[in-house]
Image (cartoon, rainbow, N blue to C red; front, side, top):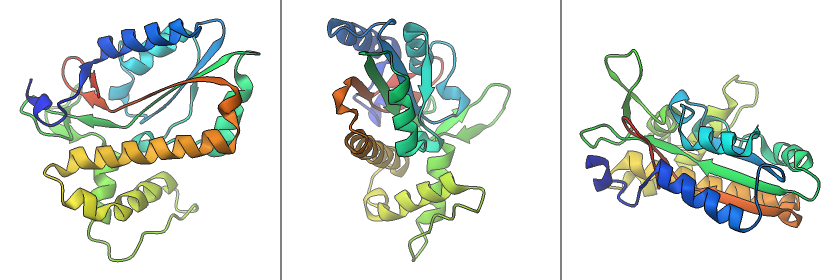
Length: 219
């Protein structure tokens, strides 16, 4: 498959799902003692029937949403605290985090033909849009909580702080997706320790959701 040229370490969603369920079950995670959560972009192509978010939610039967645009866990420290307080007594935390990147059939990162549309559109649109806006900014963009677009302002800031890394990459869309992954991984690690969630048994599955037609992949 062409997309493996760019995101070559990917696995089919079904294989990742089976591995995650089997491994977590080995450590006692099940429907009765585990509350599933995810930090995944709300783009509809990440939540279709059979996608890893959908399949894990069905497996564990309930879901707590932590993420916003680009998969960043904008629910923040308060959201993580609420999530932990909803876990069954003596139970477990299972977190999926995954920024996403579409790959077209001809191997172009960031392009996806959506249902009912004749032309390709971008995915992750928020990540790509933020990069296109931030790459030519000389000064660091500030996050204005009153601009009715706080999440996008935050993502622009992340892109701006990583301008050199993204600009130097062979494929900038693929690289900005890795930037988002690194940022989310650090964010979750910081919040888990800040909220002292380490007293819970925890399973964290992190990766990149790769949107292709007809089946998604995961890296």
